[in-house]
Image (cartoon, rainbow, N blue to C red):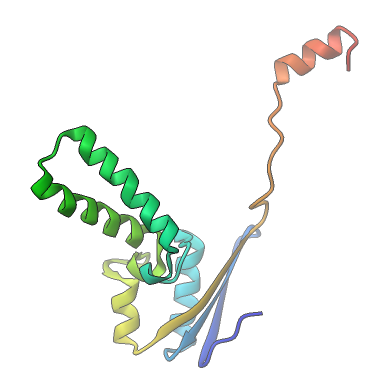
Length: 149
């Protein structure tokens, strides 16, 4: 169940993707546009602050290894690591993403302009989370030819 203090917007893309966005403030048009954005960009979190600390720490560790391998001087390494981390957090959080209908504006600035806040997002995709069996078609044909199937 998803509830918004002001409005809940929905969007269905074809027959495969459906989204819901709950807002505090804003209006139905904004909620629907954000639901369209969620369908297209598939953010994992509402904001960078919502990303679990373990994920942030793991990303920071990965970037530290990359910077170390590149031989960057220690005095700039921390800035490079934090810059890469900030970029990654923006990619996976709704408010950090560039708005799909206007790539000059972030979702966060769009929300501020409308005096709105996203309180929940839900994205459904047909087939998401289902593991598809990997089949070696050639081996399957050979097994059938040799009577093993």
